[in-house]
Image 1 (cartoon, rainbow, N blue to C red):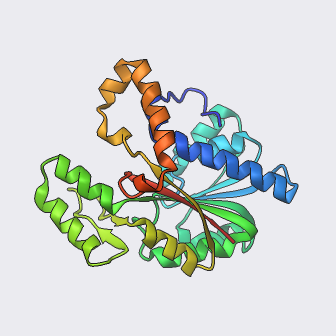
Image 2 (image 1 turned 30 degrees about the horizontal axis):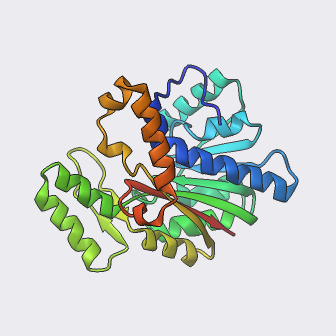
Length: 259
């Protein structure tokens, strides 16, 4: 999946994003084959600046980005203009999807780093399910509570790590971490918790991958300085992503859901 012209992706960035892009490319190809339509209806809920939406539009699909930030939407439109592809950008929240796209109108919905911030993750996925056509798919990318514990411990923030661990230990599927100064309080999830949310929305959970299993543990300057190491890191990320043992320790996990 090509990136927009003028957007530089270092090999280190590729190690952080390649697995999701590869999975989306396969999902889109499968949906085209199953539906017989070369132009799919795709909605990127909370799509921000269009990092995934614009390349999908570049493949010839009808893509709508829905995001509450007008600045992010303007950046997405600029990116689309640079790539010379049409992109619909609408200011709104996940709850607005049915009004924006219409019920059962989308073949694919992207829900990347959204469940962490919405008022109700369950309601968000229910809204997404409502706009999916039968056989349609949702791509969910969520932050891992287990990885958050590991990263804070490695940074010496042991009290924070212990508080996050307590949330996981009590069986909570959604562990809310301490807010960073000036930042919104973000939820973090277990893989089982997100699978449960997908199923509660009436969808069938599909394949899962761990995202950024090792990339966030490797200093960026190291990978950038050694192209061979960057390639090796990318290969390691791709190999580890599909291994269930590494799903929970990845910074994020990616799960598909089908209507």
